[in-house]
Length: 418
Ligand code: HAM
Image (cartoon, rainbow, N blue to C red; front, side, top):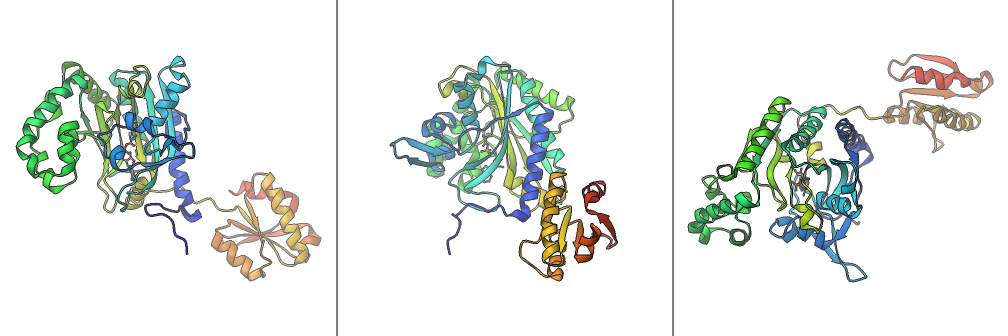
C-alpha cells in the first residue's frame, strides 16, 4: 500500500471542523485589526529565500525543498510565508498604495526537518505582516493581534516572551562580545556553531546541542548592547503592551531562527503538557525588503503553526465550536418516498437548510443508524402514508419527540428550530 511521505499528515473530514474553527478565528481576528488576506505562490525562485530568510539560518542551509524545474530554474517550496509576501508587495508596487500595508495569510509551508510531535515537513501557518511603519506602535499592534488571536481561541497556558536583537549597528558590537565570550570554548562546540561563530555568532544562542547549550546561559545579552534608538524603541513597545493589557516576559534567549530580524523579536510559548514549545513567533525585519532588491520598507509580522495550535488546544481542552452536521436527514421508506426524499433534500438546501438523504438504498433501520451516527438534528420520515398526506413525520433526534410537518412548511420548521 502506498503511504504518505514522512513528515506529512492527512487532515481527515472528522477533524476538519477543528481546522476550520482555528481558521475562522484567525480570519475574524485579522479582520478586527483590518488586515486583509494575501495569497502568494507555494513555490518561489530559490534566491528569494537564500537572500531573504538568510544563508546562516538552518532553514536555508539544511531544510529547503529545492529542485530544478524543467526549464533548469532553481525552485523552492516556501519554508515560510514572509519572504513571499515581501516579494509580492514589491513586485506589485503596493508601496504606492495606502500605508501601512497590512496582510494576513493561511498557508502550507515546507521544511526538511526531523519529524516529531508538532514538527512536520509540511505544516501550516497563520501569519500576518505589517509594512511601512517604523515606530514601536506597529510592533505593539502586531503582537496585540497575535495575543488576541490566541486568546480568542481560548488558550490560557501560552506566555509571550519578547526581546530586542537591536539594529545592524549595535549588533556588530554585540557580535564582537559574543565572539570574545565563545572563543575559548569553540574547540568543544559543534561543527555548526563553529560556522555560526564566523558568520552569525548570535545563532549559537539558538543551538540545541547539549555541548553548546551549557555555555549559552552566561553569554553576553543583546539587551546590554542596544544603542539609544533601539533601547527607546524597545521601551515604547513594552509600555504599549502594558497599556493594552498584553502580558509579557523579557527573555534574552529569544533570537529567532531566521536571519531577517532586527529590534523586536517575540514568541508565544506553551506550558501545556504534550504540546510542542513555540506556537507563534515573529518580529521586526526592517532590512528584508531591501535585501531582496526593493527599497527600504520597515516591516514587522508573525506566524503561528496550525498543527501546534491544534495540539495546544487539545492539551488545554480549549473549546472548539461544534462540528456542523446536517439539519435534517430525509428518510424514504420505499422506492417512491425515496425519490421524494431526494427531491425534498434539494428544496431544503435551496432554503438554506443542510440536508442529507439515502444514497445507498439502505433499509429503514440502517438509515436511522446512519442519521444518528452522522449527527443529523432531525430525521424526516417519508412513507406511502406521508406521500398521500403531503407531510413528513419529523423526529427530533435530541428528545425523540416527533410531529407531522407539511412538505412545503418543512424548511421553515427546520430553520426555526436551529
Ligand atoms: P518560525 O518561527 O520559523 O517563523 O515559524 C513560525 C511558527 O510556525 C512556529 O512558531 C511553529 O509554530 C510553526 N512551525 C515552524 N516550523 C514548523 C514545523 N516544521 N512543523 C510544524 N510547525 C512549525 C516564521 O516562519 C516567520 N516567517 C514568522 C514571521 C512572520 N516573522 C515575521 N513575519
